[in-house]
Image (cartoon, rainbow, N blue to C red; front, side, top):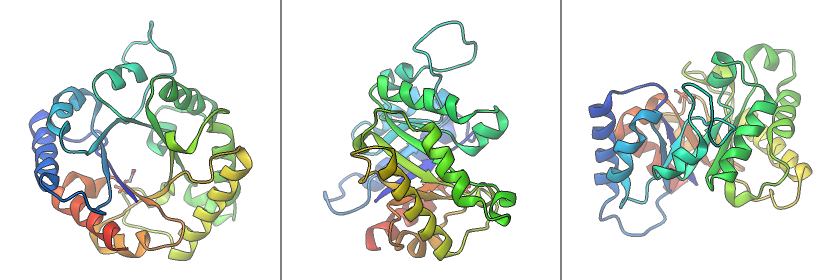
Length: 249
Ligand code: PGA
């Protein structure tokens, strides 16, 4: 189980530091138990501030995006190496907000995933269908296609996690039925198996309106290996409650 928090473009420096401190305090002194590991994806500008605050906590740190190149004339962009240099363990790629706001294609996302691997980061690759696509019965085809087109050729399960995030469930309070989530996770598992050897054990997280009240049901589903949490990750209490649900399910 892995519980990931995507802070998106939220929080000024003081708020981000306070949230990181709350999470760090909550886990400090915790017995090395079966509690689910956590990773947070703060806005890139706050990573340098937060890295030392989480350094001793065991809470992972990641960037929300990276550029495919290592350096160069790409104004406003951030290289995966820069994330690693500041202490990140992870990079998120292919989030639907990046696909929509920045027109990111599957091949651009694959290049970013490759950059993450090059920099020694673990890659969390997001996939998910829109409501229209689900309503016309195309959800599984869309997700399988996104996966096959955006996974780097050389990838192994230890460096990868998939986040299944139906676009219509993100920030909407809507959640697919438990059966729909379980079916999609099964499809993703099967597609990973087709992609190449060694990906069978890749963790597959669910994301989209996960909150303390629905976390136990979602995390208890067969084939769900964790959650990628947006809105509810901005409140330490809610994020920790979701993690607690992971530990008992
Ligand atoms: P949400 O966002 O939990 O606010 O729905 C999830 C995500 O976009 O990662």
